[in-house]
Image (cartoon, rainbow, N blue to C red; front, side):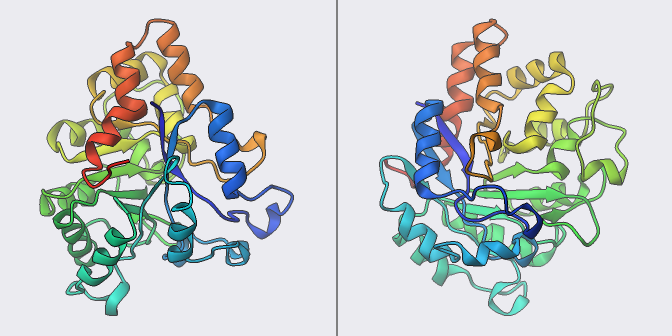
Length: 302
């Protein structure tokens, strides 16, 4: 069993990228078949304006309910997540998300994400939302970035102090990290600019991500996108050690944003190569590609 824990459907192109192909339900399923992936988690990304490119609004389902309903047509292949923004319901830390969470669960959603709101991790509105997701046994997958405007994703300084405060404040919620601001922290010595990018080169010292994974058992890491792949391959020997140490906390995902073959991601070939070379075991491969995410999705019975 192989599960892609991070896929989107829709037109994710910027206006200057209209030569690329959007992701459709049909080409998503075709990609899964061609890559030997059994199932995928569909993450609606339609709630936070920071995470939306304008062409998305002309997608066939430019709304969360429409995407969840469409994904439900493929119950054997697609796993449904809902989504939230911590500024919903009056932009207050007192928002009660119970009404919407109940309906998302009724629609078959088993998690929440990808959270892309550009507010700090430890904002009281974020803490309030994440705690309620935890009470509903819904893991939360977030995109992390550095501080400052012009980005999307939950914000943090170098060293991840705000993510640490969120983890402390919501101990009963499963949090799944993703994005440049999350994965750059695999190594120490970051600048704020590098935290929002793709730092290269050997890992001379462990970063805050390693410390957080060791400290907080409810934190997991989604290896998707260029950020996750870069973190695992910038220092190949360190990447293999990281896979061994955190084999129970890592989730395979791709975050493919375009429908053509050129837009595919190298994560599964990387894991298959490491397995073939004996650098990881079959047990590690199986955990990262399916076992870990299935263990987290306590509401999923597919």
